[in-house]
Length: 398
Image (tube, rainbow, N blue to C red; front, top):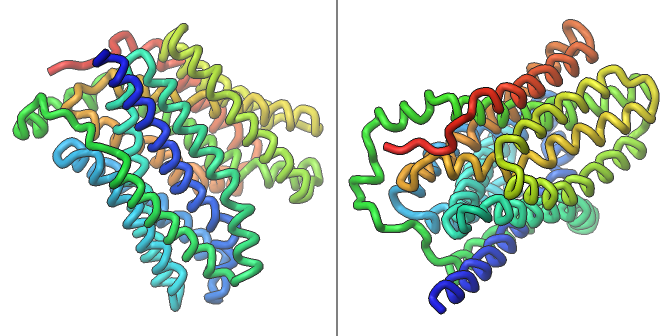
């Protein structure tokens, strides 16, 4: 009976967390289509407008690890509540910004909120999920995340047209407050107290041992290259490739992005099944190799058919990369360092997210767009192949 009650309670917590994630990510999606227009109203260049995205990602990169440490020391609810609160402050501040400097500052605050909430949510999922169902819990939350991201831009565009470019920021601020309140009322603390407070601050040597291990270096490399592929190729180079080589306009490019976005939703469940029945390592390796192959197909595509085929293969790789890596990290780190482990894992992804677009953009400008695709494709494919070779252990113990 106790086991049945625990399963029901954990299932309820999963649904509650997914709803909070939907609210948070829908909020981020709401400002997506209006942020560049809002920033350009301050009379700045396109490169400065791009900084509004960079500072958001930079905040996540800087604060992912501190967020994990906070979760280990003070509990998960601090992040699940504090993250949306910071997001709300950052969004209201952005809507009230009087210049590009203040807008960039408030975008950094909003990025800090994202780092706190998303790290807390992943740690919370790992806590409540049975070890053999972690991938399924992560996939369910990612489904909610993806739906929120997909719905947000349309809502943001309509709100901006009706009430002005600042209105979406205020809307997100309200949604974030609601998400924080919802988390306070419905999400109990999951940090176990089986270890004493001093156990949660193990010597630095243990952390160094984990970070230097082949399993962690392998998952960090795969994660960084996959995020580099998402941000540097799919979000940056793919539209330019379609415009330059195929003569496509925004309508055709947007249709491909919509189709692959829907495809991502439906790759999560096969990826979850494969993770639970075939193994984390093979799914992660497949993700890297498929993303690399898709990127290379796009690089050499001379027709619309091959371009679409490459995007489908790329999406198959990046779309299946969600549940398995998170489950792998959960197994790799002992419980008292779980928050730090999630922070390190998310930071690896954000390194690729921050570095990918400018690095691949420089390669494209200095050499060719095909060269940028080729380098990205080979890197992520090699990362996937090396992962299988490097990972024989799935957990490090003190």
